[in-house]
Image (tube, rainbow, N blue to C red):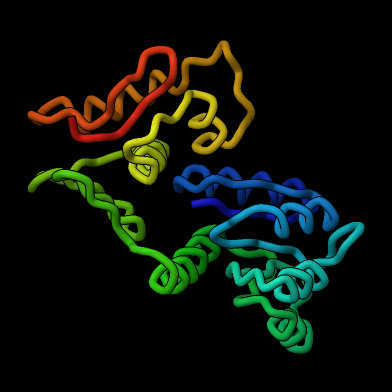
Amino acid sequence: MRILLIENDLVIANFVTKGLKEAGYCVDHACDGLEGLDLALNNSYDLDIIDIMLPKVDGLTIIERMRKEKIETPVIIVSAKRSVDDRIKGLQSGSDDYLVKPFSFSELLARIQAHLRRSTNVSEATSITIHDLSIDLLARTVTRGEQEIELQPKEFTLLEYLMRNAGNIVSKTMIIERVWNYNFDPQTNVVEARMSKLREKVDKNFNTPLIHTVRGLGYVFKQK
């Protein structure tokens, strides 16, 4: 799942980004309101985290513009403004939640998961099953047949991406941009290394392989 973070305090931004990536989420970060507004209006996210006091464009204006454009992505405001009036203004602008700084990452993560549960229940399935392999997108669990498979957060995100694109070839560039959320580096072997570990867990002890290499093109998830 993909999250947009609009936060000009780099200490907080790095702290939140690191925690979310470790939890298996893809994160786009904007450090000012103008860049954040552009990302929010022109990209699809599962949830946005927005500070109020931002340079160039303030957070409330961003949220109001999103709602005006009929973008219903869940929004959590994170702000040092802690008065009741500030929180009311934040919620009235169209946000779904308001978290006062300083906050614990565990509380932020719990709120993110709660909002994603609500939005996912309305908009899309909470699990994907192909052949005998199933992933639960909310509990972030994987089972094949009767066996539960334990994956690291990035392995889960990689498997989810492959399964969402089942039957279609996905290139190394597509994977690294979507799963690792950074531009392609032709020298890196991070995709091959993580794919090898994922295959060992998902395919090795089963009769039917599901992850296949398409030489020179990338990978495809399918039942042969």
